[in-house]
Image 1 (cartoon, helix red, strand yellow):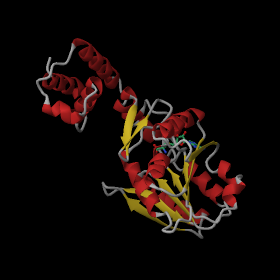
Image 2 (cartoon, helix red, strand yellow):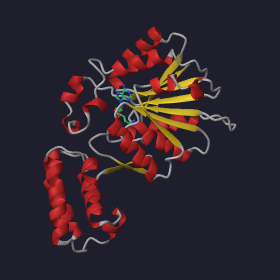
Image 3 (cartoon, rainbow, N blue to C red):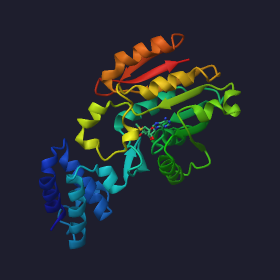
Image 4 (cartoon, rainbow, N blue to C red):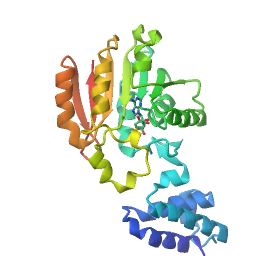
Length: 287
Ligand SMILES: C[S@@+](CC[C@H](N)C(=O)[O-])C[C@H]1O[C@@H](n2cnc3c(N)ncnc32)[C@H](O)[C@@H]1O
């Protein structure tokens, strides 16, 4: 079988999944199995795929047809141009979250005064690692309640040679920070990145494609805002001035989260940014 025949075979097999871009998925899968870049596949459509490679892709398609995401099957996902190891203990990084990294980068101070970046609910570590890769100066901290997720995040930090630049802390939202004098006594600006679980149980039930992902990374109570409610409470306990909080939301939550901020943090200014699809996605809150 040639590469081009294998691509057609994969596309046909993936037909049941109703994917937006089956060709892309076929290419990513084949490129992984043949250990060649996608461009190489395009340039060598007549190259022969051996029988072991055919068995390998068929096994992976079987898992894919059972609803597992391609990222879990391959064990990695690209985010902000960097490769991240993923497994069933972490959420697969989403392209819409890249906007949070863009906005967080804009918050750094122009002089060398160190901004403190805190990634609450770090998962694979994709946000804090992308920031630490891009920014020369800054203090980088990541928190997660899941020890298994923190293990993956640390592995990713090692993969990008950042294990000495990022502190990984275990705990509930900001609690490891609130009790840390080296942060609360600091005069530097703080930028908190929070992509916390924000789906409702009904949204989760209606999304077959995300069933293999960890529930504790997806669902945020009955209205999806449980963790943001708690985060805003904790924010009041952080004595620092000049804090920016970035929260990713589901577009359907923009009214509810605006109401919540007005009620719980009336002294804060905020705006909600739209993502590339024009959907309200990111709250930028200034304390
Ligand atoms: C939606 S995932 C986001 C992961 C990653 N930041 C990303 O953007 O791909 C939410 C993460 O928050 C973590 N989490 C859930 N509850 C938490 C809590 N109370 N404190 C800290 N982290 C929490 C989960 O373990 C999960 O890794």
